[in-house]
Length: 201
Image 1 (cartoon, helix red, strand yellow):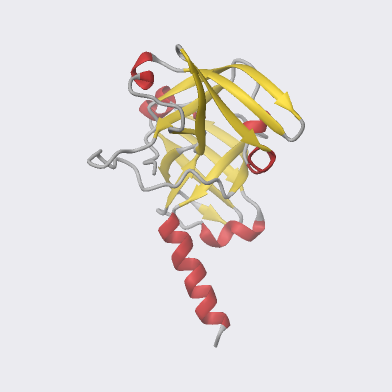
Image 2: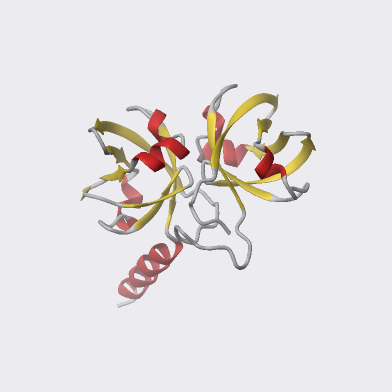
């Protein structure tokens, strides 16, 4: 389980690419290495990945074809900053909202509006997922727990404070970029339950 409180960003330092398969290696800060073991779960841009090798501060993760297709991790290049969150432990403060690390779809950045103390980013989502998007609802964008702002048809926006821009990679996003989206699991369950009940009438 994850909380959507990104701890830092880490740079991709290398790739090992094979057919329908990829390993990427990132360099983690010392505080994230402490107690880390092979098999541990770490969220990369909100996507849960498993540690497969630890070599000092260089940590490897395997990505299957489905992960590369459904998420934006296949778009990464050497040097790309990735939002990092280690799995939550029992007793940890839940500062964001409960997340599984399973990406449902990607959205496209359509506009970035900067002001002195705020940044607003607008997104376009696939039509079939707009039923999950509600103003003031929770959403995870590249692993960041955020509150949805305005919603219009299949577009929505979020407002970002300076702390979020400093701690995560979202401040580097520009129109056309693909963003990983995880819908709040409770929202998804409620919407799908209501749809199922209504379709049975």
